[in-house]
Length: 294
Image (cartoon, rainbow, N blue to C red; front, side, top):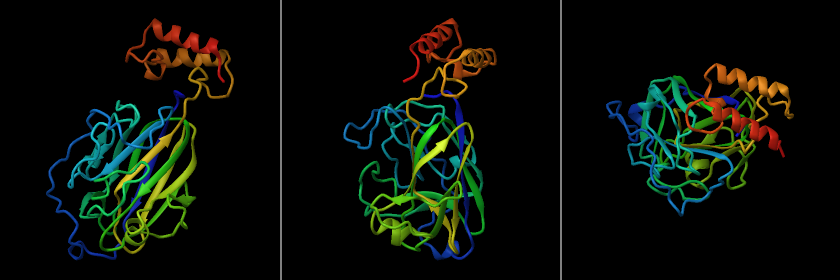
């Protein structure tokens, strides 16, 4: 993959409209710390695998159980108070350079979002919609993802709820989703029950370009609380790693850029993937440079 890394920020704002006492499915703030992502054995029947691209799948909330440990990343509301590093790639089950940090808050756990009615399909599996992490009324916060390699990504967001049809406004870089999984219209705001749970549907943004910069996915509640059950970031492709300066050509400037990374101790120069910077990284870089880019 292209060694350049980018940052993904997912911002959230919950607007006053429904009190916590009105919604019996909100979990008290006394929830204990949930598990962090653990590498395990991949499920051989899980669908949606593309071994050529990065595929980060997150189940927000762990009160109702964890989702495919070793493939999915199970992040509860308390974990969002700090950084969780080494998010797992679904394709390989290995830790990646991608991390998530919840900025702002405080974050709440939502439980009873779905009793299992949301159909497993494409990449989605249960119990990912049975709980969530989100915000109380009137609060703003951000999901901060770092360490994404440059490339073109697809972002998919699931918000499903059995009661209190939360009206969520989702945009990526100021743009609404361009489609839904079922091909139905992109409703704005997106109802967690009427548009999400009942048809088992979610929002999709295609061709999200990440080139050494920032992607902002804004979430706000239109008169309600706001929440996410599950999120998928997939794509990135296998870019030409030797084109370190990203100009589409292999030149002396890529050699200079590699030397600068190596001298700075930046692990983007770890071309042999052993976690250290050695002469073998120089040799691997030279080999890939000599092979050229397709």
